[in-house]
Length: 214
Image (tube, rainbow, N blue to C red):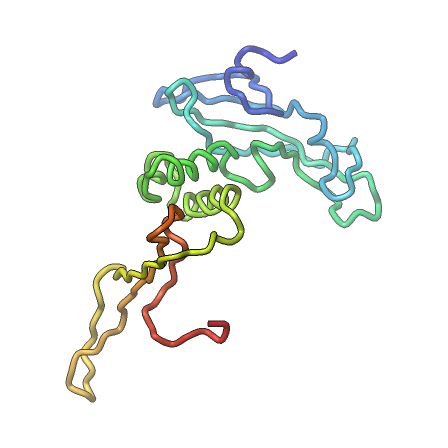
């Protein structure tokens, strides 16, 4: 029977067993697995019966009711029942907390949507969701890939602009008795000026050399 706390938490496949407050007053939610499919080997699909060991993970999640929460999921590692299966053993996983994931799926999706739909920068979204900017960048890429077409529509007027990333770095060359540039990063953006597709692509560098395909 699913309790009200589990419904409030809203993580499909996980059951809230207990909630307590840590020393900072943050709710700590103890979770157990409530999905029978989690006992099935992800490689061969057979349902396991023998437990290898117990393990506890602490995936990060969105705030609940405006308050940050800490999740503590005690789950089982099973022996795969199929002798020829190369997996041998596996740990329980659910859609909201995939295997080896330190974040819930909904936290990743919210971080990506903050950039794609809310107009936040990757740094802002990372700060707001308490994750690193590479995580947000990957989440934004996944979000954009799901909604954008594989190829843009034909462009009538193409805009090209270059942007310097940071300041150039210089080093003194003893042999030449002069300063030389050691780092000067540029990005070139391609924009649909006449249509509504916005930024089409962004590449690093500003060289005039063409690619073999170009």
